[in-house]
Amino acid sequence: MDENVAEFIRRSILKIPLCEMKTILKAWNFLSEDQLQTINFRQRKEFLAQEVILMCEEKCARLDDMALLDIVCEDVDLFDMKWFQCSFKKILQRALRNVTVSFRVDGKNAVWIRIAWGTQYSQPNQYKPTFVVYYPQTPYAFISSCHLKSNVPLLHQALKVASKHHQIVQMDLRSRHLDSLKAIVFREYDQTFESHNSTVPLQEGNLGLDMNLDSNIIHENLEEKERIHRVTQETFGAHPQPQLEFAQYKLETKFKSGISGGILADRKEPLRCLIKFSSPHLLEALKSLAPAGIADAPLSPLLTCIANKKMNYFKIRDK
Image (cartoon, rainbow, N blue to C red; front, top):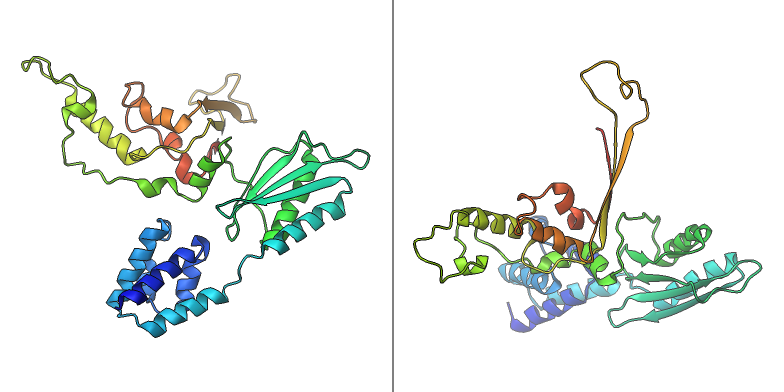
């Protein structure tokens, strides 16, 4: 395959939004269905582009194939920023007389929206605005708290119409750190995972052991420390974790006992329990538990699945 063709395909792939990638490659109709199934659409675009280029080399892509990809890319319904802003603002202002809406597009093409809410009898409160960050051509928007809860459905409606989506579903995920929320939702954090060969023993220096100890001293827990380190790396990876401040678990279960009678035996309502873990950097704190000897490795899946499930609010009920 010609180098110019490969470079053009690479640049075309980098311009395509990840959420549209599979659709566009399928519409291109150059790669086979089997090849499309093997592509990891969750990896970084640079790696994805390289993967596609290798497949194109196998099929000897030509200038005509490159041109067809360009046509398919141009045919995609591109995001109209002016239409989004106009329709979003119009929906809110039609429903509420006293509301101010401001927009800003940052360097990452994210739309920042500031909404100051008023009521029928009061001017917009500029001291308690709601902030929304929407990433065009994705199904995700990040919303700060709204002090007028009755306006939340209207805000959702404006987002649906302006972004051309049919419904909005609230995720059980909250944090003060937008970059961490974005990393979890778009799975950017696990793109820096390092591969760890579990058959290679850890060096003592990696475990923080004093290499000047008497050689006759036997490190009885060395193997266990190696296992804990390996399991921790396999669970969390070697990368920095997204920053969340808490995880909350609500448990609802019916009382079960083999002994008949008793105060709780006839209880129809489930027993309820609320457990909340909090830390300035919860996921890093969880990652450090086993190496510090505070918890066994591996940790419970309820603690390690937070980023994968994109949740830090959990409801646990009887099956």
